[in-house]
Length: 506
Picture: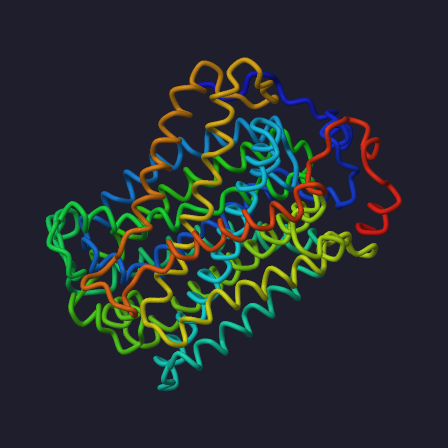
């Protein structure tokens, strides 16, 4: 299937295209095609998503659901990514999903898509960096007998957030370099981890165990329901590839590079993630002992049982560094979303959040807002053991619908949609409808309770978070609807107060 309906034009003026879409270029276009792919690949981060939710998967369906669920979810997510890439090629802006929805469906479509996208991105930062904190605690536990209490884990988490904020303030060139390193770190890390788990342990599980063993520790009796819930591991990991779109205004030849970045990040992660999950599952020595690991992290116990203390510590460091790369990339994507949404006056205090440093051409205030909001989302983890699962579900049910809305509106627009240089051609409609139906299903699925009986501690608060954001977005709509709006003309500023805009951005 050919997904490119015109040849690459190295002379394509992306700055002029941005002006045609209504925006004055203010961000530094210093990222190449590989760097754009790298940021989405880093955000997907199989060494973050697969590892942090592996324990959840062990109880919600077990090995069979983890492996086959990964294969199936990856296929559907690839359909979502292909469809989203096509729309990204037509509208390569930092606003990404909400800008696409605004142009294809109108202001209110853009408004709600933006708020869903923002919720998902902030939930992703919280989930990624808290997962990194959990693994850091597990490493310290193995090395020095550190007791990873919720309070100590929270302090590590806040330190990681601060690190990512500072790294992002140096500018997009550093972010791009770190993401490029991240790609090779992830791929080499998977190869080393799986290779060690294949070679070193004396005992391995059978293929029958890995691909057919079903485990249900959720409290629910219906195996279909349990298997469906278990898909969260894969669906959570396969999120964040909109980062390529959010960095469009900082990418050369973005109309093609950003679209390719989305698709490539998904299929590379799909293959490498399956290898990682299989390697971990074959190497399980004691299933119950792994689930109840004293490290608090089941994959750490697999490494410890199979490789010993020194080997486990070394490979945990590989995982932690990968997770740090992932969180840093997600902060970059979320801050660009905050910047773009504020540029169109959708957030309270937009004049502050859309400011760009004249030295680094980075939205400094937006970076700080992203990390502070992520810290607040993770605070319930101090009091509830199930809160982390809720945070990851918040990421999924916030960002996944935001992926499908532009695709649905593109399908509804029919011939009114003008494709960019990267297009699915005749495959656009069938692939697009598969993507929309899949997203509708998983959005409902991950609002459902994940364990039984449903109590204050075990409740899935993701649905409440989604409801709160939609209510707040609706209330704020009636306050900001007169000022909010994407540009409607190619001549940027012809329908805006340029003096006010310059004061707010530069």
